[in-house]
Length: 354
Image 1 (cartoon, helix red, strand yellow):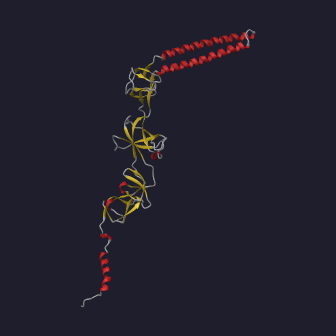
Image 2 (image 1 turned 180 degrees about the vertical axis):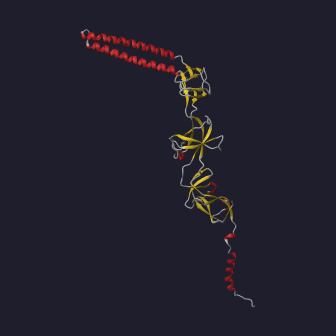
């Protein structure tokens, strides 16, 4: 068999074809980037945000005297039960009793003068009929009588005020409860309006927390919220009812939220956490580690057919270890890369680790 000898121009045309055929290999032979992926979910995480607060009695009061003086006597101690109307403490003010006695004397004087003026007026009526007194004299007697009657009313009001001040020297329980704290000792001077004692009722508790404006919109009075004890976070939560929602007057201010609690094991001062779900949003949830920051903006690597494609996303807000995003290229159930991003480029073939 003779050797086939091809001319040089023909060989020059065949060499690129042979080289291309040798380089034509399947993408399956290319090395793959090892990554871990997470599934994109609709909406947001169902785990509520927790806000810390302290249990307090629903009915509580800081008791004060309306007058100044020296605390003469305190009849209760911390932890003592009291009933409505019980005398708790007594104040000594050297001006109160003399002021009351002086008001009583002024009232008696005004009543005596008013009585005399009434008698003079009644005696003057028949004298006017006989022409002894003129109409002008009768009018003067009547005016003096009316003036003294008004003075009686003024003296009676002054006496009521003085007697009320005397009663303010005695501190009484406004409702049945337990003494939480005593803030003044016998012998100390107490100014008007300064708390000297704190009592609370064991019937019903509540907790107050502060929430941002973004969460306040989805809360209504009477709504049930989970409440956890800080000392036992893994236990089943208690159920609280929203009783009050405060209003804010400045931008960015936190809103007070009061939650009523009905549980016999709670005591005032216990630390608890109130759970509040974030309002539903038209967004997708994925791990925050999956988001890549580039010069073009935030993006994630979407894995389809073992190929990673970078798609842009719009970050809405953080939610713990998750992030809420919006993107036309993503949908619930898609897989995005959250580990192995440093070795990954757009269009790379990937190997997904379990």
